[in-house]
Each structure stands twice: as C-alpha cells, then as structure tokens.
Length: 277
Image 1 (cartoon, one colour):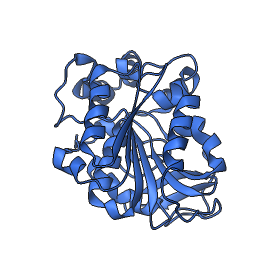
Image 2 (image 1 turned 60 degrees about the horizontal axis):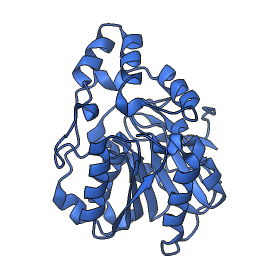
Image 3 (image 1 turned 60 degrees about the vertical axis):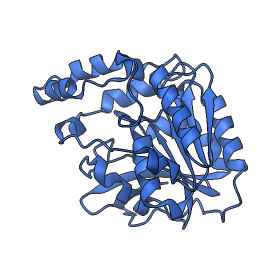
Image 4 (image 1 turned 135 degrees about the vertical axis):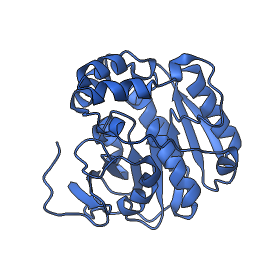
C-alpha cells in the first residue's frame, strides 16, 4: 500500500507492507524507500513502514535533518514500535530515540555515524559535502553522482548494484542545497536509551563505522552489536539474507507487542496518493 503523510510543511511518500510488529525504516543519504525492498520478505511477520525521507524520493517535505524526528510520530501508527535507520537515517533514528524513548519497543542502527563522539581514523568516512553541494549548485549533478558513486561509503557488490544505481539515478541533490544541519548525538544520549538497541555494520564497512557500532552497543544499557558478513556500508543491500536473519532473530527475542494491521495507513495520510513503484 502507498500513502502520503502530511508532516506540516509537505508530504512524505510512504510504502506500507505486512502485518505484525510495526517497524519504521529510515533509509540513508541519496537513497529512498526502495533501499529496503530486500527486507520485504520480513513483511510476513512485521508491518513495514518505508518512507521517502524529507528531501528524498517522491516526498515533497523540504530537507531538514533537525525536524525529521517529528515526522516519525506521524509515520508510526502504534503506541510503540520498532525504529530502524541506515547511515544518515540512523542519526535521525537516534535523534528520535533520545526524544521519544517511551514510544520505542526497540532501536536498530546500521552503519550509524557519531561525528561528535567517535574521532575519525581515516578519510574514507569524510563526506565532502561542500564540494558535492557546489557541484549541484553549479548544475553539475551528474558529476556529483559520479564522485559519490566512487566513495567508499557508496560501494556496493553485484547483488546491490542494480537497486543502488537506480536510486542514485533518481537522486536530485535538493538536500545539498539546504543549509547543513548535522545532528549532534552525545554519549549521555546513548547511555540513557532504555530500549533494546541493535547496532549493525557490514564486515567490509569502514573501520570507523564498525568502531561506532561497537561504541553504541557498549554505551546503550541494552545494546548489542552484530556484523553482517560479505557486506559493506550498505549491508542490508549487499547481504540481505544475513541482514534479514539477524534482524528477525533480534525482533523475535523482544517482548510481544500488539500486532498492527497491514491495511491501516500511517497517520495524516492522503488516500488519493498514487503508487511510487
């Protein structure tokens, strides 16, 4: 099912599939909700809520990282739900978790960055945002995409390449034209998280991202770390079978939550929306 969710200053395009425990899934930078298509087999036991985040995909809400946590309250129907984020989406998920911990049944973070907490140990993790923004601003979006496609964080294997390349082809760079608003997550924020936290990274992700994973797992009171073999930064795309198995095992161990119906759209939805495909 497809829906449009009104978040006040625009709409978020959202795909919903399955029934069971509600799982809201936040994609990473230059991607859209299609990045979670390899996780659709989990819809036989979960209600998957897959938005195009602000400034991404077919959503019309303007990019604003600092405001994204508010959008999640509009996306989740249940009183409590599981929240998962990939890369930049993991930063948004952490921002929500520190502000609305009472709503989260569990938190899953894949390839999360912690720029203010864990020092960089290699340039592989630095994003030349200003350079990319200048390319977009001067009409060189195609060059920006080529540069980003060669970045270590955008590496993908043969399994992931067709889907990643399709999403990158549709990326329009509008978020790069917005003022940067990085999210600052402190050690105290993670130490105060009351919910179970699963921190993930691919075995081939950068050393810094794997170190961030371990810091999160150690700092969260109910944290644990897992590694997805034969996968890089985009671990859910590179090795979806193992990613899905690890996620399913983690969620199966949680206390039972009242299932959500597959037929109930997110809050403030527009039933006239057309499918995104």
